[in-house]
Image (cartoon, rainbow over all chains, first blue to last red; front, side, top):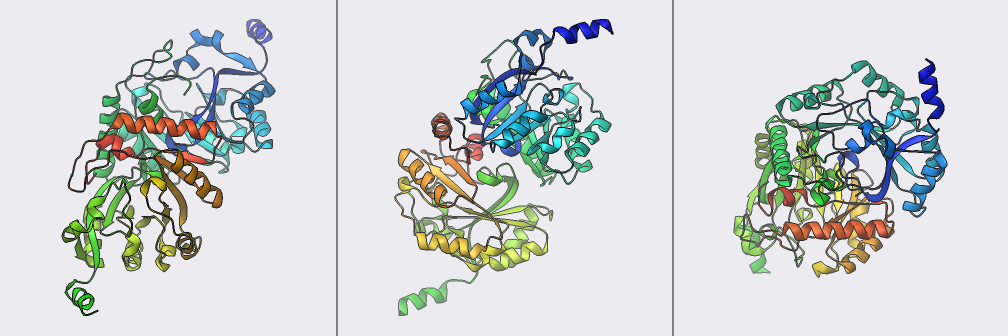
Length: 251
Length: 251
């Protein structure tokens, strides 16, 4: 207890930020192609086997995560966007770890919109303030397991207010079956399937190599699966930023 | 006059179909990634310099366009989709040339949805029956010119009922300026920008070569333009089917 308090005492207040970058286009899912500034928080309660954002997840990089106040973060978003309202993507790591409600309120004052992407392992009451909530439960290939009660709690917290969608990463048949199962459980949520990047960057790399041909083959495989199974409600989209810029960070 | 009547008399009734294929994913614009069956009609009132569907446009291919009845078309869509409702894309050529209202009504009976893509040069009262209307006025590089009165008439015909969006192809600065101008004129319409394919297939080719690197460079250029100009309402998307399958027809 004393130790926990001591750690609390030395940790500066604010939101732990891994990086803020943009504007660039959103590369994935429901907002694909949308000009966006990304606010990536540091820290995650998961350790997905194929995580493509380890620099925002692995506690080895904790020293790179800068604690920032709402006003510091907001000033940076405003500079990057030239004060012109746009979509802000709150990502991570798991951004639900951080207290982001006040940031969303601040941005809404200026006419910005907010999308959050999370695995759905931590529900926050400020989810209802979001414009877009992307729930991305992790499939078997991640070697993580879904806490269904928490996932339900995330939906409850959203109160149906943001546009809420499922984004499901698929590396193979087991992931595909998982995706079908999740989508069947939540038929009212638009479903986006995404082939996995089997060549994610290492945590230290800022521009690691990526196997584009392999990614495209997985994309074709996924399109074939969906059309053969007549799963016509699902949308299948690659990671556009990976096709455009490989594993380069900050684009 | 006699000649025209003679031609009319020998032309069989029905809708002129260039090809029906799918299901595959929609590669462009607002429905990108959506499993879709494509019904491509034959014939066009435009001859865009960079047309990528000449086999459905050039009257040299008129003999390949099969006149089909509503029931024939619908039977084929049902076979391709296994009777499972999905999105049907009506494309061309300019599908607005054909009388498609009864086809849409027939499909709606079975729970299918319909998207139409047209340059907006011909208004039809059945536009209001559509689920999605994609208006794609052609930019200067096409060497076509927009008939603003007809374009307005298309919007009027839609009566605000389908989800109506702009899709603007951009090959260079003049096209970009055109796109900005059109989007500014219709701020209530979601705008999708698409880098042009400068290596379109020839009319005879079923799988012509495509310069993917060049397409990607144009995509990056367009993302840079949009973000530098802070045109944050526009979404920028490549032709996903071209990235996946090149100029191959029927996917």
